[in-house]
Length: 510
Image (cartoon, rainbow, N blue to C red):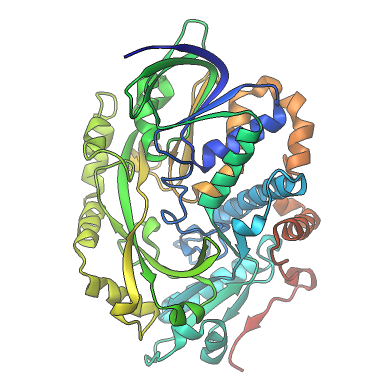
């Protein structure tokens, strides 16, 4: 075992979409900074960012019903939906900046226009969807949203789903044509190609085994070459831990107080993939349903058109599952080894609270193919078993922490940034809508970790993201400007500006 010592400005751990995004932003803001990336796999974007390991939805709350819960008084809470939509607009602005500057080529390789739809069955759900439509449709962020409970109109929108549907149960859908399908694997690879052209050193097959802080505030990393076992020591002024499910273990090694009392709950996923091109051709949308009672938010069923390697695919899922691994390529001991004296009570409390969830995940793991087909047939009544194969998706590690609202051991659904008080290190934990909101999350890290640089960097940030520092909700004209400019740069559809005349398209049976 040999050892080397290297000093650099910034180290990014993990070659996923988060590190790719932060590295690209920092190279624009501080081009003279030296950046190194360590990734234990052979290529970038092979875990959560890989196109087969996530839903590929440009999450903008256009169709995801779990972002718009119904309150006890019957009103629809739109706060989370608005926030996520605004964050996705930030991502689109940054990608457009890179395309316009010719730093990213062929945006169609990673983003395509695709209608986003919500589909519900049953009288109560139809009422909920109509209320949701009314709550969102006057908001310029959701321009162009249409609602229909007319079976004939729905046959035009989703012929494959409406085909041979014999039940008299009420059905309704909303549709918005400005949705997107995003290949986050392709985007990650493009960003890393760009970073390497900017002289960023990316070391694949390198695992970070330990992290400790030096007296001068810098961080020392013990990095091992996966194949040879050779160990190097690297020092950096700033470290970002963007290792997906592997981030929690690395955060624990830092010893920072902000990383205490945090646990992780791993959830795996499976998708059904259609192998019949004739069936694939009949569907052109991402159609999200409602999660079953007792199911976690990450298991909302959806039937998705996907473009992977520029080939059209059709996926249904996700079916949740349980594995103690924190990464798809991780160890079966990951969950056990994440239990520490400071988080054991938090983890035990979560275990007691989430017995129903654990039972649900175990039931999902035990499902036969025919049982999965039965769930698919709720969407596609005439789906044939031989047309569908099972694919294992990525691992997600949901954050467990103590909160004022939920008490000890509360399971969090979403993405969380944990950073040291001195701003020298930050880690990203959690799951969806992660990748879609990567640019906003990385800007949050920059604000937290480099406050002394913000005044100097702000003009450049505004050049990259024109809406930076502004509320899009309070600037409808800016929303239209962004929709138009990003659609032009990325080859997307401009939403219909239906809110401007006070009328929205409610397509119903006369």
